[in-house]
Amino acid sequence: GKRVRVHHLTAAKAAGERLTMLTAYDAPTARIFDAAGIDMLLVGDSVGDNMLGHESTIPVTMEELLPAVRAVSRSTQRAMVVADLPFGSYEAGPQQALASAVRMLKEGGAQAVKFEGGTRVAEHVRLITGAGIPVVGHIGFTPQSEHMLGGKRVQGRGDDAAGRLCEDAVALQEAGAVAVVLEMVPAPVAARASEVLQIPTIGIGAGPSCDGQVLVWLDMAGMGDWSPRFAKQFAQIGAQLHQAASDYAAEVRGGVFPTQDHSYAD
Ligand code: KIV
Ligand code: NA
Image (tube, rainbow, N blue to C red; front, side, top):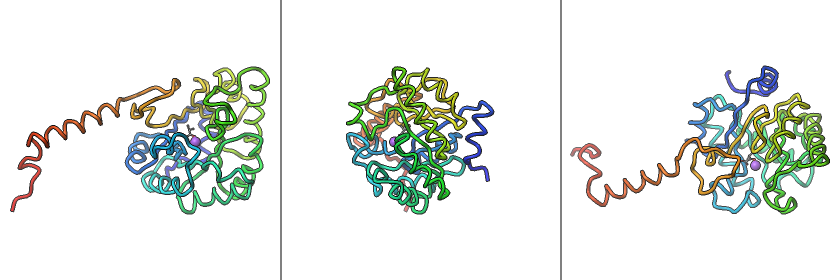
């Protein structure tokens, strides 16, 4: 098949080809992004603040995430589908993490899982990888720890923190991770981590030197009500959707829509 698989990730890095990743939470966006050639679709716990009306990712549950994983998996032919493990579904230890990861594949149809943390989750990564499930790491700013980190802040600033970040990245690679997301990390630190690792780094707010990039699709497409500084809006889908809805309402109220063309004959 032509599915993007784990060996393509390291091969892409070795060939100097940048990897593309977007979030997706439902069938229509997954279908569109897959057809557009996005390499990896992340069913992120960012579904919480982007789609479900939560304030953050912290309240998101397996029961909320699994239907989204299923919808994306069913609607994707080429992209690798990566499912986030939500807060509370892996912190208790490697066994809990494995059980959650297994559900994402068996019930969700995902091809890989992602969860937050470096050295502290290395044993989780080792067990899950050993069970045959690819793991994507996630270090730097990790939204599930925002209360411990003191808010949405750049991580890895200064020599000590930069050194720890690189150690975390290496620990994930040694535990078997197939890629590592670097979120809100100074560009030079992300460049250093990308140089040290054989597996690809996937940056978000981590500068241009990562081996790939990821964005929340609503930030990428101008669909959200707010978007972080590191994002770029490649469209204004929110404004277009607003216009479409008001045009529709005006035509219905004015008796312009529907016409004979949209009606059935007797
Ligand atoms: O949940 C998510 O969207 C993520 C990305 C921002 C990496 O974890
Ligand atoms: Na996430």
